[in-house]
Length: 542
Image 1: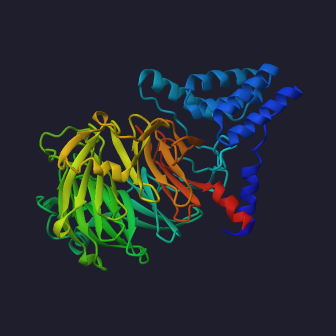
Image 2: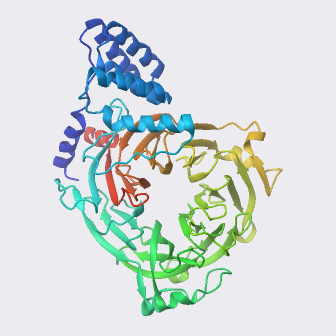
Image 3: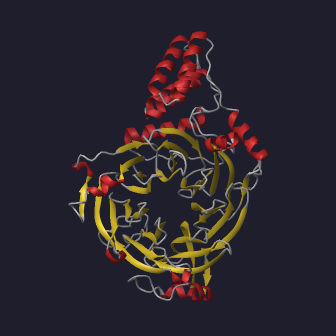
Protein backbone atom coordinates (compact mmCIF):
# COMPACT_ATOMS: atom_id res chain seq x y z
CA UNK A 1 0.00 0.00 0.00
CA UNK A 2 1.43 3.44 -0.89
CA UNK A 3 2.64 5.55 2.01
CA UNK A 4 0.11 8.28 1.21
CA UNK A 5 -2.79 5.89 1.77
CA UNK A 6 -1.27 4.62 5.02
CA UNK A 7 -1.00 8.13 6.43
CA UNK A 8 -4.57 8.94 5.38
CA UNK A 9 -5.93 5.84 7.07
CA UNK A 10 -3.94 6.57 10.19
CA UNK A 11 -5.55 10.00 10.45
CA UNK A 12 -9.00 8.41 10.10
CA UNK A 13 -8.23 5.99 12.90
CA UNK A 14 -6.93 8.69 15.20
CA UNK A 15 -9.74 11.26 15.05
CA UNK A 16 -12.07 9.47 17.49
CA UNK A 17 -9.50 8.65 20.16
CA UNK A 18 -10.53 11.29 22.69
CA UNK A 19 -9.56 11.35 26.34
CA UNK A 20 -12.72 11.59 28.50
CA UNK A 21 -13.37 14.79 30.38
CA UNK A 22 -15.68 16.15 33.09
CA UNK A 23 -16.70 19.74 33.81
CA UNK A 24 -15.75 19.55 37.52
CA UNK A 25 -11.96 19.77 37.81
CA UNK A 26 -11.55 17.09 40.51
CA UNK A 27 -13.84 14.73 38.57
CA UNK A 28 -11.87 15.43 35.41
CA UNK A 29 -8.66 14.38 37.13
CA UNK A 30 -10.28 11.14 38.31
CA UNK A 31 -11.79 10.22 34.93
CA UNK A 32 -8.42 10.72 33.22
CA UNK A 33 -6.73 8.50 35.82
CA UNK A 34 -9.39 5.87 35.17
CA UNK A 35 -8.81 6.12 31.42
CA UNK A 36 -5.07 5.60 31.95
CA UNK A 37 -5.68 2.64 34.25
CA UNK A 38 -8.04 0.98 31.77
CA UNK A 39 -5.49 1.52 29.01
CA UNK A 40 -3.12 -0.58 31.09
CA UNK A 41 -5.83 -3.25 31.56
CA UNK A 42 -6.13 -2.40 35.28
CA UNK A 43 -9.91 -2.65 35.08
CA UNK A 44 -10.79 -2.66 38.80
CA UNK A 45 -8.59 0.37 39.42
CA UNK A 46 -10.25 2.12 36.47
CA UNK A 47 -13.73 1.41 37.86
CA UNK A 48 -12.77 2.94 41.21
CA UNK A 49 -11.52 6.09 39.52
CA UNK A 50 -14.58 6.38 37.25
CA UNK A 51 -16.90 5.96 40.25
CA UNK A 52 -14.97 8.70 42.02
CA UNK A 53 -15.46 10.96 38.99
CA UNK A 54 -19.20 10.21 38.87
CA UNK A 55 -19.51 10.95 42.59
CA UNK A 56 -17.79 14.31 42.11
CA UNK A 57 -19.68 15.13 38.90
CA UNK A 58 -22.94 13.11 38.45
CA UNK A 59 -23.49 14.77 35.06
CA UNK A 60 -20.22 13.54 33.55
CA UNK A 61 -21.47 11.35 30.68
CA UNK A 62 -17.89 10.54 29.61
CA UNK A 63 -17.26 8.81 32.93
CA UNK A 64 -20.45 6.77 32.55
CA UNK A 65 -19.51 5.79 29.00
CA UNK A 66 -16.00 4.69 29.98
CA UNK A 67 -17.05 2.74 33.07
CA UNK A 68 -19.49 0.89 30.82
CA UNK A 69 -16.53 -0.48 28.87
CA UNK A 70 -14.81 -1.51 32.08
CA UNK A 71 -17.91 -3.48 33.09
CA UNK A 72 -17.96 -4.96 29.56
CA UNK A 73 -14.45 -6.29 30.04
CA UNK A 74 -15.60 -7.98 33.25
CA UNK A 75 -18.66 -9.45 31.53
CA UNK A 76 -21.04 -7.61 33.89
CA UNK A 77 -23.69 -7.00 31.24
CA UNK A 78 -26.43 -5.62 33.50
CA UNK A 79 -24.06 -2.91 34.71
CA UNK A 80 -23.03 -2.14 31.13
CA UNK A 81 -26.65 -1.64 30.06
CA UNK A 82 -27.68 0.33 33.14
CA UNK A 83 -24.65 2.60 33.01
CA UNK A 84 -24.97 3.35 29.29
CA UNK A 85 -28.69 4.04 29.66
CA UNK A 86 -27.77 6.63 32.29
CA UNK A 87 -25.16 8.09 29.94
CA UNK A 88 -27.75 8.39 27.14
CA UNK A 89 -30.07 10.32 29.45
CA UNK A 90 -27.29 12.86 29.94
CA UNK A 91 -26.20 12.78 26.30
CA UNK A 92 -29.02 11.50 24.01
CA UNK A 93 -26.91 12.17 20.91
CA UNK A 94 -23.98 9.99 21.95
CA UNK A 95 -22.59 8.51 18.72
CA UNK A 96 -20.90 5.37 20.02
CA UNK A 97 -23.22 3.84 22.64
CA UNK A 98 -25.99 2.98 20.11
CA UNK A 99 -23.48 0.89 18.14
CA UNK A 100 -22.69 -1.42 21.04
CA UNK A 101 -25.73 -1.26 23.31
CA UNK A 102 -27.63 -3.94 21.29
CA UNK A 103 -24.76 -6.43 21.69
CA UNK A 104 -24.59 -5.72 25.44
CA UNK A 105 -28.34 -6.32 25.78
CA UNK A 106 -28.10 -9.54 23.75
CA UNK A 107 -25.28 -10.76 25.97
CA UNK A 108 -27.40 -9.98 29.03
CA UNK A 109 -30.35 -11.90 27.59
CA UNK A 110 -28.36 -15.02 26.83
CA UNK A 111 -26.75 -15.01 30.26
CA UNK A 112 -30.08 -14.54 32.05
CA UNK A 113 -32.24 -16.91 30.02
CA UNK A 114 -30.02 -19.03 27.82
CA UNK A 115 -32.11 -17.99 24.81
CA UNK A 116 -30.33 -17.34 21.53
CA UNK A 117 -30.74 -13.83 20.18
CA UNK A 118 -29.50 -12.27 16.98
CA UNK A 119 -28.24 -8.74 16.40
CA UNK A 120 -29.06 -7.70 12.83
CA UNK A 121 -26.71 -5.26 11.11
CA UNK A 122 -26.54 -4.22 7.49
CA UNK A 123 -24.33 -1.73 5.69
CA UNK A 124 -22.02 -1.06 8.65
CA UNK A 125 -20.24 2.25 8.04
CA UNK A 126 -16.90 2.03 6.31
CA UNK A 127 -14.01 3.08 8.55
CA UNK A 128 -15.91 1.89 11.62
CA UNK A 129 -13.39 1.37 14.38
CA UNK A 130 -13.23 -1.17 17.16
CA UNK A 131 -13.81 -0.02 20.73
CA UNK A 132 -12.85 0.72 23.46
CA UNK A 133 -10.50 3.40 22.26
CA UNK A 134 -7.75 2.58 24.74
CA UNK A 135 -7.39 -1.02 23.51
CA UNK A 136 -3.82 -1.88 22.45
CA UNK A 137 -5.13 -3.21 19.13
CA UNK A 138 -7.76 -1.71 16.84
CA UNK A 139 -9.61 -2.69 13.69
CA UNK A 140 -10.82 -0.32 10.96
CA UNK A 141 -13.16 -1.35 8.15
CA UNK A 142 -11.29 -0.21 5.03
CA UNK A 143 -12.93 -2.23 2.22
CA UNK A 144 -16.11 -4.21 1.70
CA UNK A 145 -17.45 -6.43 -1.09
CA UNK A 146 -21.21 -6.94 -1.00
CA UNK A 147 -24.22 -7.75 -3.18
CA UNK A 148 -26.98 -5.90 -1.31
CA UNK A 149 -26.33 -2.24 -2.18
CA UNK A 150 -25.65 -1.38 -5.85
CA UNK A 151 -25.63 2.34 -5.05
CA UNK A 152 -22.93 2.49 -2.40
CA UNK A 153 -21.54 5.99 -1.79
CA UNK A 154 -17.86 5.10 -1.33
CA UNK A 155 -15.58 3.42 -3.86
CA UNK A 156 -14.27 1.17 -1.07
CA UNK A 157 -17.80 -0.30 -0.81
CA UNK A 158 -17.73 -2.64 -3.81
CA UNK A 159 -20.99 -4.01 -5.21
CA UNK A 160 -20.42 -7.48 -6.67
CA UNK A 161 -23.06 -10.11 -7.45
CA UNK A 162 -20.49 -12.91 -7.10
CA UNK A 163 -20.75 -12.38 -3.33
CA UNK A 164 -23.51 -14.93 -2.70
CA UNK A 165 -23.54 -16.57 0.74
CA UNK A 166 -19.77 -16.19 1.36
CA UNK A 167 -18.79 -18.95 3.78
CA UNK A 168 -15.06 -18.61 4.40
CA UNK A 169 -11.85 -16.85 3.46
CA UNK A 170 -8.17 -17.82 3.38
CA UNK A 171 -4.90 -16.23 2.28
CA UNK A 172 -2.06 -17.15 -0.04
CA UNK A 173 1.14 -18.14 1.75
CA UNK A 174 2.92 -14.98 0.62
CA UNK A 175 -0.06 -12.84 1.63
CA UNK A 176 -0.69 -11.18 -1.71
CA UNK A 177 -4.15 -12.68 -2.26
CA UNK A 178 -7.30 -13.59 -0.33
CA UNK A 179 -9.64 -16.38 -1.46
CA UNK A 180 -13.36 -16.17 -0.68
CA UNK A 181 -15.68 -19.18 -0.97
CA UNK A 182 -19.06 -18.04 -2.33
CA UNK A 183 -21.05 -21.11 -1.29
CA UNK A 184 -24.41 -20.62 -2.98
CA UNK A 185 -22.76 -18.86 -5.91
CA UNK A 186 -20.63 -21.95 -6.59
CA UNK A 187 -17.52 -19.80 -7.02
CA UNK A 188 -14.11 -19.12 -5.50
CA UNK A 189 -13.12 -15.44 -5.71
CA UNK A 190 -9.52 -14.20 -5.83
CA UNK A 191 -8.81 -10.74 -4.36
CA UNK A 192 -5.81 -8.56 -3.60
CA UNK A 193 -5.09 -8.93 0.10
CA UNK A 194 -5.98 -5.31 0.90
CA UNK A 195 -9.44 -5.80 -0.66
CA UNK A 196 -8.94 -3.13 -3.31
CA UNK A 197 -9.43 -5.37 -6.35
CA UNK A 198 -10.99 -8.66 -7.45
CA UNK A 199 -8.51 -10.67 -9.50
CA UNK A 200 -10.27 -13.82 -10.69
CA UNK A 201 -13.37 -16.01 -10.43
CA UNK A 202 -13.18 -19.81 -10.34
CA UNK A 203 -16.50 -21.46 -11.21
CA UNK A 204 -17.26 -24.85 -9.67
CA UNK A 205 -19.68 -25.81 -12.41
CA UNK A 206 -18.82 -28.93 -14.39
CA UNK A 207 -20.44 -30.45 -17.44
CA UNK A 208 -20.04 -34.09 -18.45
CA UNK A 209 -16.76 -33.45 -20.27
CA UNK A 210 -15.23 -31.48 -17.37
CA UNK A 211 -16.11 -34.26 -14.93
CA UNK A 212 -14.48 -36.80 -17.23
CA UNK A 213 -11.29 -34.73 -17.47
CA UNK A 214 -10.95 -33.55 -13.87
CA UNK A 215 -12.73 -35.91 -11.46
CA UNK A 216 -11.26 -39.11 -10.03
CA UNK A 217 -12.63 -42.23 -11.70
CA UNK A 218 -13.00 -44.21 -8.46
CA UNK A 219 -14.98 -43.18 -5.38
CA UNK A 220 -12.91 -42.20 -2.30
CA UNK A 221 -11.99 -44.73 0.36
CA UNK A 222 -14.76 -47.33 0.76
CA UNK A 223 -17.66 -45.15 -0.40
CA UNK A 224 -20.04 -46.14 -3.17
CA UNK A 225 -19.70 -44.56 -6.62
CA UNK A 226 -21.93 -41.58 -7.40
CA UNK A 227 -23.00 -42.27 -10.97
CA UNK A 228 -25.11 -39.11 -11.17
CA UNK A 229 -21.97 -36.98 -10.87
CA UNK A 230 -20.83 -38.20 -14.31
CA UNK A 231 -23.55 -36.08 -15.93
CA UNK A 232 -22.16 -32.92 -14.39
CA UNK A 233 -22.66 -30.96 -11.19
CA UNK A 234 -22.06 -27.70 -9.32
CA UNK A 235 -19.96 -27.82 -6.17
CA UNK A 236 -20.77 -25.59 -3.20
CA UNK A 237 -17.35 -24.34 -1.98
CA UNK A 238 -17.09 -24.10 1.79
CA UNK A 239 -13.46 -23.97 3.07
CA UNK A 240 -9.98 -23.69 1.54
CA UNK A 241 -6.26 -23.88 2.25
CA UNK A 242 -3.03 -23.27 0.29
CA UNK A 243 -0.25 -25.86 -0.11
CA UNK A 244 3.03 -26.53 -1.91
CA UNK A 245 4.68 -23.14 -1.50
CA UNK A 246 1.70 -21.14 -2.66
CA UNK A 247 1.06 -23.31 -5.73
CA UNK A 248 -2.28 -25.00 -5.00
CA UNK A 249 -5.54 -23.89 -3.41
CA UNK A 250 -7.64 -26.75 -2.04
CA UNK A 251 -11.37 -26.01 -1.86
CA UNK A 252 -13.85 -28.39 -0.24
CA UNK A 253 -17.44 -28.73 -1.43
CA UNK A 254 -20.18 -28.76 1.17
CA UNK A 255 -22.13 -30.92 -1.26
CA UNK A 256 -23.06 -31.24 -4.93
CA UNK A 257 -26.04 -29.22 -6.09
CA UNK A 258 -28.32 -32.22 -6.71
CA UNK A 259 -27.52 -33.97 -3.41
CA UNK A 260 -29.95 -32.05 -1.19
CA UNK A 261 -29.58 -34.33 1.85
CA UNK A 262 -25.83 -34.83 1.57
CA UNK A 263 -26.14 -38.61 1.22
CA UNK A 264 -23.51 -39.03 -1.47
CA UNK A 265 -19.80 -38.36 -1.57
CA UNK A 266 -18.69 -34.77 -1.93
CA UNK A 267 -15.39 -33.49 -3.33
CA UNK A 268 -12.40 -31.19 -3.00
CA UNK A 269 -11.03 -29.15 -5.90
CA UNK A 270 -7.29 -28.61 -6.37
CA UNK A 271 -6.77 -25.22 -8.02
CA UNK A 272 -3.59 -23.91 -9.66
CA UNK A 273 -3.28 -20.43 -8.13
CA UNK A 274 -1.02 -18.96 -10.82
CA UNK A 275 -2.98 -20.37 -13.76
CA UNK A 276 -6.31 -19.79 -11.97
CA UNK A 277 -7.85 -23.09 -13.01
CA UNK A 278 -8.97 -26.37 -11.46
CA UNK A 279 -6.54 -29.23 -12.02
CA UNK A 280 -8.22 -32.10 -10.20
CA UNK A 281 -11.41 -33.02 -8.34
CA UNK A 282 -10.81 -35.57 -5.57
CA UNK A 283 -13.54 -37.41 -3.71
CA UNK A 284 -14.41 -36.87 -0.04
CA UNK A 285 -17.01 -38.19 2.36
CA UNK A 286 -20.51 -36.64 2.49
CA UNK A 287 -20.76 -32.94 3.38
CA UNK A 288 -17.07 -32.14 3.57
CA UNK A 289 -16.37 -29.14 5.78
CA UNK A 290 -13.07 -28.04 7.28
CA UNK A 291 -9.70 -28.71 5.67
CA UNK A 292 -6.31 -28.59 7.37
CA UNK A 293 -2.73 -29.47 6.37
CA UNK A 294 -0.05 -30.86 8.66
CA UNK A 295 2.90 -28.55 9.39
CA UNK A 296 5.30 -31.03 7.72
CA UNK A 297 3.23 -30.56 4.51
CA UNK A 298 2.73 -34.31 4.14
CA UNK A 299 -0.90 -34.77 5.15
CA UNK A 300 -4.24 -33.16 4.40
CA UNK A 301 -7.24 -33.75 6.68
CA UNK A 302 -10.85 -33.09 5.61
CA UNK A 303 -13.74 -33.38 8.08
CA UNK A 304 -16.93 -34.93 6.74
CA UNK A 305 -19.88 -33.40 8.58
CA UNK A 306 -22.28 -35.86 7.01
CA UNK A 307 -21.15 -39.17 8.52
CA UNK A 308 -18.69 -38.71 11.45
CA UNK A 309 -15.53 -39.25 9.40
CA UNK A 310 -12.26 -37.48 8.57
CA UNK A 311 -10.39 -38.22 5.35
CA UNK A 312 -6.58 -38.22 5.47
CA UNK A 313 -4.78 -37.62 2.18
CA UNK A 314 -1.09 -38.00 1.36
CA UNK A 315 0.00 -34.76 -0.33
CA UNK A 316 3.77 -35.30 -0.15
CA UNK A 317 4.02 -35.45 -3.94
CA UNK A 318 4.63 -32.29 -5.95
CA UNK A 319 1.85 -32.69 -8.54
CA UNK A 320 -1.94 -33.09 -8.15
CA UNK A 321 -1.83 -36.51 -9.80
CA UNK A 322 0.52 -37.64 -7.01
CA UNK A 323 -1.96 -36.86 -4.22
CA UNK A 324 -3.78 -39.91 -2.88
CA UNK A 325 -6.18 -41.13 -0.22
CA UNK A 326 -4.41 -42.44 2.85
CA UNK A 327 -6.87 -43.29 5.62
CA UNK A 328 -10.50 -42.71 6.59
CA UNK A 329 -10.88 -41.98 10.29
CA UNK A 330 -14.24 -42.90 11.79
CA UNK A 331 -15.07 -40.73 14.80
CA UNK A 332 -16.55 -43.32 17.17
CA UNK A 333 -19.11 -44.62 14.65
CA UNK A 334 -20.36 -43.73 11.19
CA UNK A 335 -23.59 -41.76 11.03
CA UNK A 336 -26.18 -43.64 8.99
CA UNK A 337 -27.14 -42.03 5.68
CA UNK A 338 -30.56 -43.70 5.68
CA UNK A 339 -33.79 -42.03 6.80
CA UNK A 340 -32.12 -38.62 6.96
CA UNK A 341 -34.00 -35.50 7.99
CA UNK A 342 -34.24 -32.43 5.79
CA UNK A 343 -32.02 -30.31 8.04
CA UNK A 344 -28.55 -31.84 7.66
CA UNK A 345 -27.09 -29.00 9.69
CA UNK A 346 -28.54 -30.86 12.69
CA UNK A 347 -28.93 -34.43 11.41
CA UNK A 348 -25.18 -34.98 11.29
CA UNK A 349 -24.22 -37.45 14.00
CA UNK A 350 -21.47 -35.81 16.02
CA UNK A 351 -21.24 -33.00 13.43
CA UNK A 352 -17.47 -33.29 13.13
CA UNK A 353 -15.91 -30.05 11.97
CA UNK A 354 -12.78 -28.43 13.44
CA UNK A 355 -9.31 -29.87 12.75
CA UNK A 356 -5.88 -29.05 14.17
CA UNK A 357 -2.51 -30.73 13.76
CA UNK A 358 0.10 -30.37 16.50
CA UNK A 359 3.22 -28.49 15.44
CA UNK A 360 5.21 -31.73 15.14
CA UNK A 361 2.47 -33.21 12.88
CA UNK A 362 2.13 -36.19 15.22
CA UNK A 363 -1.35 -35.44 16.62
CA UNK A 364 -4.65 -34.56 14.98
CA UNK A 365 -7.54 -33.04 16.97
CA UNK A 366 -11.13 -33.34 15.69
CA UNK A 367 -14.01 -31.33 17.22
CA UNK A 368 -17.52 -32.76 17.62
CA UNK A 369 -20.08 -29.94 17.63
CA UNK A 370 -23.04 -32.13 18.56
CA UNK A 371 -22.86 -33.77 21.96
CA UNK A 372 -19.44 -32.29 22.67
CA UNK A 373 -16.05 -33.91 22.73
CA UNK A 374 -12.71 -33.65 20.95
CA UNK A 375 -11.33 -36.86 19.44
CA UNK A 376 -7.54 -37.15 19.29
CA UNK A 377 -5.47 -39.23 16.87
CA UNK A 378 -1.73 -39.95 17.00
CA UNK A 379 0.45 -40.96 14.08
CA UNK A 380 1.71 -44.47 14.63
CA UNK A 381 3.42 -47.22 12.67
CA UNK A 382 3.47 -46.97 8.86
CA UNK A 383 2.03 -43.44 9.14
CA UNK A 384 -1.28 -44.78 10.39
CA UNK A 385 -3.34 -42.34 12.47
CA UNK A 386 -4.36 -44.24 15.60
CA UNK A 387 -7.21 -43.25 17.90
CA UNK A 388 -5.82 -41.93 21.19
CA UNK A 389 -9.09 -41.04 22.92
CA UNK A 390 -11.86 -38.46 23.29
CA UNK A 391 -11.88 -35.64 25.82
CA UNK A 392 -15.29 -34.47 27.02
CA UNK A 393 -16.35 -31.43 29.05
CA UNK A 394 -14.04 -28.73 27.68
CA UNK A 395 -16.86 -27.22 25.60
CA UNK A 396 -20.52 -28.26 25.19
CA UNK A 397 -20.18 -28.14 21.39
CA UNK A 398 -16.63 -27.33 20.21
CA UNK A 399 -16.37 -25.83 16.71
CA UNK A 400 -13.07 -24.18 15.76
CA UNK A 401 -9.77 -25.36 17.23
CA UNK A 402 -6.31 -23.82 16.77
CA UNK A 403 -2.87 -24.09 18.34
CA UNK A 404 -1.03 -21.13 19.84
CA UNK A 405 1.91 -19.68 17.91
CA UNK A 406 4.41 -21.69 19.98
CA UNK A 407 2.34 -24.89 19.83
CA UNK A 408 2.10 -25.20 23.62
CA UNK A 409 -1.61 -24.42 24.00
CA UNK A 410 -4.84 -25.23 22.19
CA UNK A 411 -7.70 -22.74 21.79
CA UNK A 412 -11.23 -24.12 21.37
CA UNK A 413 -14.35 -22.11 20.54
CA UNK A 414 -18.01 -22.95 21.11
CA UNK A 415 -20.91 -21.48 19.16
CA UNK A 416 -23.64 -22.43 21.64
CA UNK A 417 -21.97 -21.16 24.82
CA UNK A 418 -20.05 -18.20 23.35
CA UNK A 419 -16.92 -19.30 25.20
CA UNK A 420 -13.25 -19.86 24.42
CA UNK A 421 -11.05 -22.34 26.26
CA UNK A 422 -7.27 -22.44 26.47
CA UNK A 423 -5.81 -25.87 27.13
CA UNK A 424 -2.14 -26.95 27.62
CA UNK A 425 -1.36 -29.38 24.80
CA UNK A 426 1.11 -31.79 26.44
CA UNK A 427 -0.92 -32.09 29.62
CA UNK A 428 -4.06 -32.85 27.60
CA UNK A 429 -2.59 -35.71 25.58
CA UNK A 430 -0.86 -36.90 28.75
CA UNK A 431 -4.27 -37.76 30.22
CA UNK A 432 -4.41 -40.70 27.81
CA UNK A 433 -1.03 -42.20 28.72
CA UNK A 434 -2.82 -44.90 30.72
CA UNK A 435 -6.25 -44.56 29.10
CA UNK A 436 -5.64 -45.06 25.37
CA UNK A 437 -8.83 -45.38 23.37
CA UNK A 438 -10.99 -44.17 26.25
CA UNK A 439 -13.39 -41.28 26.73
CA UNK A 440 -12.35 -38.96 29.55
CA UNK A 441 -14.65 -36.35 31.11
CA UNK A 442 -12.48 -33.39 32.08
CA UNK A 443 -14.85 -32.55 34.95
CA UNK A 444 -13.87 -35.84 36.64
CA UNK A 445 -10.20 -34.79 36.78
CA UNK A 446 -8.19 -32.02 38.42
CA UNK A 447 -6.99 -30.85 34.99
CA UNK A 448 -6.39 -27.08 34.88
CA UNK A 449 -7.42 -24.95 31.91
CA UNK A 450 -8.87 -21.48 31.19
CA UNK A 451 -12.38 -20.75 29.92
CA UNK A 452 -14.16 -17.42 29.33
CA UNK A 453 -17.37 -16.14 27.83
CA UNK A 454 -16.55 -13.67 25.04
CA UNK A 455 -19.69 -13.21 22.93
CA UNK A 456 -22.78 -14.66 21.34
CA UNK A 457 -22.45 -17.40 18.74
CA UNK A 458 -18.66 -17.67 18.47
CA UNK A 459 -17.89 -19.14 15.04
CA UNK A 460 -14.53 -18.92 13.31
CA UNK A 461 -11.50 -17.50 15.08
CA UNK A 462 -7.81 -17.15 14.33
CA UNK A 463 -4.58 -16.56 16.25
CA UNK A 464 -2.66 -13.47 15.13
CA UNK A 465 0.61 -14.59 13.50
CA UNK A 466 2.75 -12.04 15.35
CA UNK A 467 0.94 -10.59 18.35
CA UNK A 468 -0.77 -12.25 21.33
CA UNK A 469 -4.35 -11.78 20.14
CA UNK A 470 -7.29 -13.89 19.06
CA UNK A 471 -9.83 -12.52 16.58
CA UNK A 472 -13.30 -14.11 16.67
CA UNK A 473 -16.60 -13.79 14.81
CA UNK A 474 -19.76 -13.42 16.89
CA UNK A 475 -22.50 -14.70 14.62
CA UNK A 476 -25.42 -13.74 16.87
CA UNK A 477 -23.92 -10.43 17.95
CA UNK A 478 -22.78 -9.49 14.41
CA UNK A 479 -19.41 -8.29 15.61
CA UNK A 480 -15.71 -9.13 15.67
CA UNK A 481 -14.20 -9.72 19.10
CA UNK A 482 -10.53 -9.28 20.02
CA UNK A 483 -9.11 -11.15 23.02
CA UNK A 484 -5.70 -11.68 24.56
CA UNK A 485 -4.19 -15.13 24.08
CA UNK A 486 -2.64 -14.98 27.55
CA UNK A 487 -5.77 -14.73 29.72
CA UNK A 488 -8.59 -14.60 27.11
CA UNK A 489 -9.69 -11.16 28.31
CA UNK A 490 -11.67 -9.13 25.77
CA UNK A 491 -9.72 -6.18 24.36
CA UNK A 492 -12.14 -4.80 21.81
CA UNK A 493 -15.15 -5.25 19.53
CA UNK A 494 -16.30 -3.87 16.20
CA UNK A 495 -19.67 -4.25 14.44
CA UNK A 496 -19.80 -6.11 11.12
CA UNK A 497 -22.52 -6.97 8.60
CA UNK A 498 -24.82 -9.80 9.76
CA UNK A 499 -24.14 -12.67 10.29
CA UNK A 500 -20.35 -13.24 10.31
CA UNK A 501 -19.07 -16.80 10.09
CA UNK A 502 -15.66 -16.98 8.36
CA UNK A 503 -12.47 -15.14 9.29
CA UNK A 504 -8.80 -15.11 8.29
CA UNK A 505 -5.70 -12.99 8.97
CA UNK A 506 -3.04 -12.22 6.35
CA UNK A 507 0.35 -13.89 7.02
CA UNK A 508 1.95 -10.51 7.78
CA UNK A 509 -0.76 -9.79 10.37
CA UNK A 510 -1.90 -6.66 8.58
CA UNK A 511 -5.39 -7.49 7.31
CA UNK A 512 -8.39 -9.27 8.79
CA UNK A 513 -11.07 -10.56 6.39
CA UNK A 514 -14.55 -11.55 7.54
CA UNK A 515 -17.32 -13.29 5.57
CA UNK A 516 -20.93 -12.56 6.54
CA UNK A 517 -23.00 -15.39 5.13
CA UNK A 518 -26.42 -14.39 6.42
CA UNK A 519 -29.12 -16.35 8.24
CA UNK A 520 -32.69 -17.28 7.32
CA UNK A 521 -32.47 -15.23 4.11
CA UNK A 522 -31.51 -12.09 6.08
CA UNK A 523 -28.26 -10.15 6.21
CA UNK A 524 -25.01 -11.52 4.90
CA UNK A 525 -23.77 -11.44 1.30
CA UNK A 526 -20.90 -9.32 2.52
CA UNK A 527 -17.12 -9.62 2.89
CA UNK A 528 -15.44 -7.07 5.17
CA UNK A 529 -11.76 -6.13 5.11
CA UNK A 530 -10.29 -4.67 8.30
CA UNK A 531 -6.93 -3.04 8.85
CA UNK A 532 -5.23 -4.09 12.08
CA UNK A 533 -4.19 -0.78 13.58
CA UNK A 534 -1.41 -1.84 15.91
CA UNK A 535 0.45 -3.30 12.98
CA UNK A 536 -0.10 -0.06 11.04
CA UNK A 537 1.31 2.04 13.89
CA UNK A 538 4.39 -0.17 14.06
CA UNK A 539 4.81 0.16 10.32
CA UNK A 540 4.65 3.96 10.46
CA UNK A 541 7.22 4.07 13.26
CA UNK A 542 9.64 2.30 10.95
